[in-house]
Image (cartoon, rainbow, N blue to C red; front, top):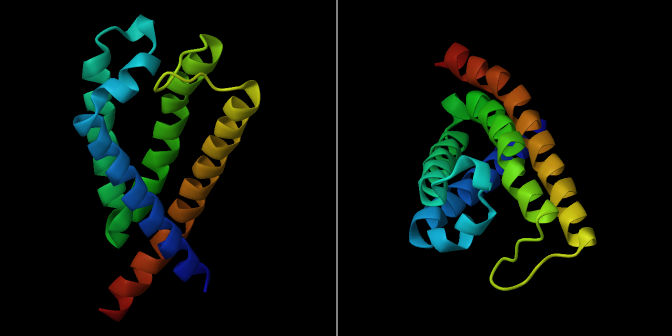
Length: 136
């Protein structure tokens, strides 16, 4: 039952990451404002993070790579939070709207939840893969 739950979460998060990664290419102007100025070349970083999100999303949906993908997703979400924090600290609007402190705090909690979920997925997968190998 626990493995089915992990699989369901992995498929959901994987598909979401893949879709959001694609959005980095179809609408980079949405993401560019929150790239920290220190990095420069916002479009490059939007495309680069899109590639990473697509790769992690795809890997999360494949059982054999799910454990590594879950760990990579957790690390990526931690690194990616820099953009969200930049948005919060510098009151950067998205689509013409700035977020309240409450909304930014909710985003931070959601980010922590996704990190925990990614690690939960990563922990369960090796046993599942080992069972598949033993049965095959």
